[in-house]
Image (cartoon, rainbow, N blue to C red; front, side, top):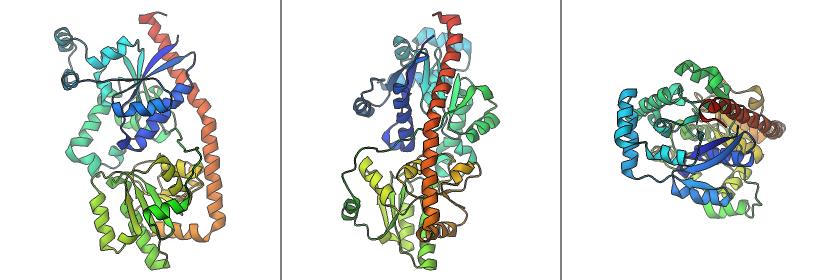
Length: 405
């Protein structure tokens, strides 16, 4: 039985890595539709329509007014089957689910840990969980303040047990979901993050970056939103140590949107005489992003949240050395591709940078290992299709019991 899958793309570009990852899954599903499933794409943001159009992908916009959204939220408060039936008789089905049923959707696939999953009362769903770092590091403002931790726990505790399938990208996340939320292991499937690389011809060169941004020295690169957990300050501390201990001066390129921590970082650079060497940029286009990767001394990513992140994969593609957090659960193959750093000790970063500069043999080995790591991931995409087929075939067998052929 061929399943019609309603794929919900509910990300804005400001989400950063989550946006990139979600859209790569869209393209993957579009290119791999088969006898087991047929994807139908929906987005809740009008600004995303151009993106789908550029990739020649049909998409429907789910546009709801404030009253329809309020009605949906109110419906999630009801926990009783009895009162839910009364609510439905009085007000009918919510507009989101009506649209999906009108399009003959058999199952919904949320490409993010979406709260919209709570609005489904009739249609089954698959949901994606990127990480559970709010559990690993509850101290950070972005998961601690304004009841964000409680909201995420509420979503996971209500949405995950009801999901037909939960998609994660690592065994680490799968194990912790089972532990924290008492979930059925067989309902959680592992599909790695999709790679996104700019394979178009780049017409610009390093001089473009130097002239446009007035870069003075060799530079380190870190594309990440300015959240506290991204740990930009560790890079500033490490470069400060590098300058004092090894007399090496480097520039630092930060690209991303301010999430409330930019002022703190700028104050730190001024107080430590680093301001002239640090470039705080907003989002850059894909061509400039590729140029920054290709011409940087290294990608430095000392994030507390992980273990999976997209920038190291991009750096592997552009043959750029990677300095990365020494997460406990990294695979040996991945560790062989990067320079691991201890986030408790910024001098670790200074040592890694010094090694990259002075040990060309090791640097080349890490780069080669990174390219091989990507090749192995590409080979695994065949297995990803098998996982999707298994999910939809299994659901189709059950679906026949109440829907027929």
